[in-house]
Image (cartoon, rainbow, N blue to C red):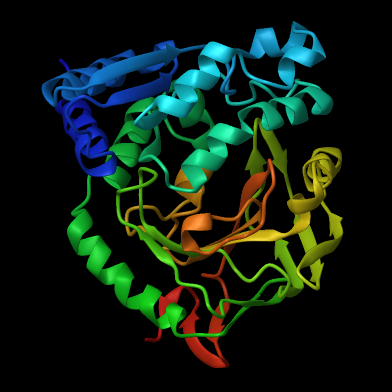
Length: 359
């Protein structure tokens, strides 16, 4: 039998996340495995009197992975003219990730990966500037379930449980915490191997209550670019990016930049990202996870960064719509668990300890 949660999920994505309007051209990027959700989404888009522009491909990139491995380098520097036109004129964008193998793309040479990042940067910048509504989400597959240490039905329950929440109620709860951060000048994060200070002076955060990525369940900021100081160690969970897993990442900041870095595994990839461009060593995001239905790490950043009682820090591009000024082809979220002995301070006041709010 067809899972009725798929249709509910599609209504959430098209309605709340994108709020598709009549006449819009909505680009839907996905994989063959997500066919049930893609079809449910296109039906919802049609019912709203809008166009569904499907981009069904193979691999995790915005372009086909096999093409990216073989194409002349000059073609990797800039997208095809017809695709650039689509990126410039599309009214909304949805990415439904449904990998057959979560390591796909990890064998793409770093040089080619960097060129692809530059190719898609104009469209990424348009989304980050909030010129169009967009949403990234997941459709449950065996590969993701295996990474999470679950069987597929268990992972399906996990995905739908994290997404199909009362988002209006979640918005109200998270807004109270966000407003306290808005009023602060300095955030201090203390935890295992970690003592990091960053500035939010003059910056206002944003609550992700199911209008951006799905699942939502965080509030986030782009910190002042030259004010991050100290050390953070991501000792609890691996930092996952583009099919790579870097365990034990440690970053030391001085004057807002990463001046020292290490990892217990895949350190070469870590440095390939930090050295991708001048902005890749700057902190682009501080996020605070608040989703009550996400309590475990599943090696999927879209879910992991929302774990209740965690923070995530992203090196690279900031968000212009919350005052971020840093530019980079990189935006890599790394999750720090504060539930075992961590603290959050705002201007010296303890506001969270062991993942529990004190405000």
